[in-house]
Image (cartoon, rainbow, N blue to C red; front, top):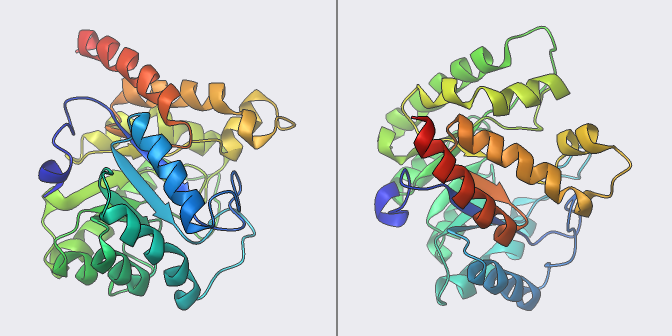
Length: 272
């Protein structure tokens, strides 16, 4: 299913464009909250070469207010319905709520992107299985522990997620792993999540990297830098991730990352 949706997966780095239809996203909150604004931005990212459009209706930034199931559905479904009838790449739904995933998949989304790795809501894996939808399983923690080996923690977390997926009837070929940069990690652990992608690739699944404009980038380039001015740092982190083995990068700035990925892919091929 993943390869039928994303035939270039494993052949080159894929670029997932972020489409937040929220009023309070940390980076572009409110800019694309209306259906028409979201469609315009989706069209721009598609023209720039996005391979996937990731639609989210709830901000997951630190301190964000949790929204109800009904509100999240009301935000994402009208956008997904319009995207699904247009000339756009496959749509993923960025949610940890099974009800939102169900509504989004019925509306035309094809992939579930769960920041809690199928472990927050017990029905999430079953919803994906019923729709034969691939899942992006992200590592997350409720607390930050600087003493742990974060990649070893990811491996344990992912094994639980994979067990849940298998019990629900999702084949391993439907799973993509995401180390979850910015979620329950120290700065050093976030850096390790990028640097040690190869250890996750060794588990046998595609890996998605999501560093775009995040606090880690701000901490490394200067915390006073406005979020929208973290492009160069984000590109650097994603090139590093690609060279370490990442298959998909989730970004706000599609055009710049298509160029960067093309160069990084060419270099990576000569490293093997």
